[in-house]
Length: 181
Image (tube, rainbow, N blue to C red; front, side, top):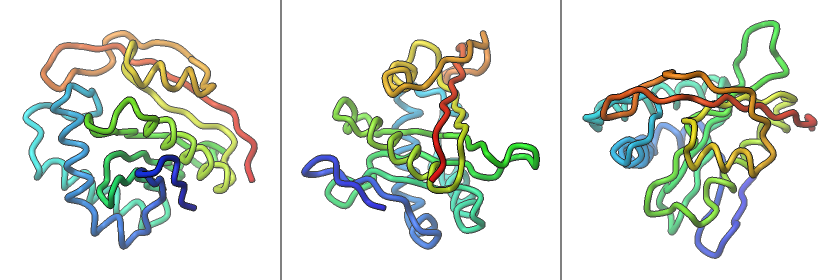
């Protein structure tokens, strides 16, 4: 599956080999997002070593079939990414988590995030999933995007996480029911 949604941006899943080979490019997107203030599990300073270690773990998950890694590429360069986490507890084989939807600051406000989310939903559908779950910072661009894409707000957990520079932020949980392929 590969989708070109504009003349310059292509959305596609990475193979296990590609996921391992693209760690540097993926790390650049993660670092940009964290340095831009995104609360996505990391604190400042966000070093290439921290980012690379995270993406190596993701690549291992792709290789083991536990997750799908989807990227947005512009002129051959990764500018965004999202993950579909397939591996769930034994009593939740029908569920997937959507995680780390990241768009480089220079690629925002052009539909990249929405295209990544549509691709993630389709990948989950093809994987036989019917319930999707995600969380995001309350009041963020992500929260508005997910609501616009038909995700249902479950609720807000106050003081759930830290901003990269410190200080607490609230998190909003969403779910979406889909029909598996």
